[in-house]
Length: 232
Image 1 (cartoon, rainbow, N blue to C red):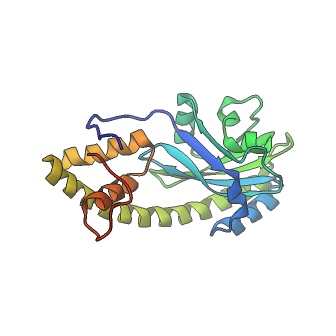
Image 2 (image 1 turned 45 degrees about the vertical axis):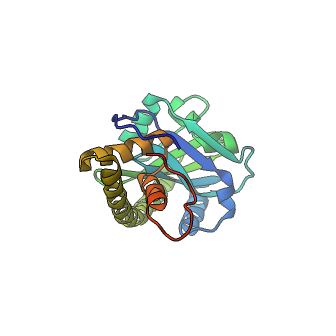
Image 3 (image 1 turned 30 degrees about the vertical axis):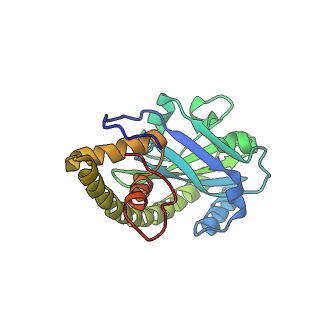
């Protein structure tokens, strides 16, 4: 593993990833996605979770009535599209064939979608993720479909916020332990050790909690050899 760098790195482009094989897996969100897909006459429904520290939108649940042509796809979005997603406040729809903000969504290529609805899942201050609904035909979503997507969006936001709070508590505990290790081994201040963790997390597009866990597993004896090496 490469050494950490202290320089602060600002990510301006989002990466979006989707493995269509998730459609074969049961999740807590599956029933809600199936209902939203049916009630909006859509062929696909996807939930993305936004990892702010790595600027990654990661698909966690997929429902589709059609087979995917591409199983696994990750795309780095342009800066304008990334900013567009960041600023979304309400559901929007568009034609991937003619609108740049929609054409790079993985499900568009995977399922050959002609129309896509994108619903931001956010609190007042934070983007938690996205809900997308896709159609194989170029037919706009009517008011009834929009009401369904907004209702599903509110429910999913509440679920993701619950999961996010649990994750942040776990992450905070891991990061505090890893910071203490770095402060001792590298003779860093608390702020420097935090920046070290955050910047390395962004460069590897890995959640900070995972980086912290690697450091803990490497330097805290457990009686077994560490599963990975972490050069810091």
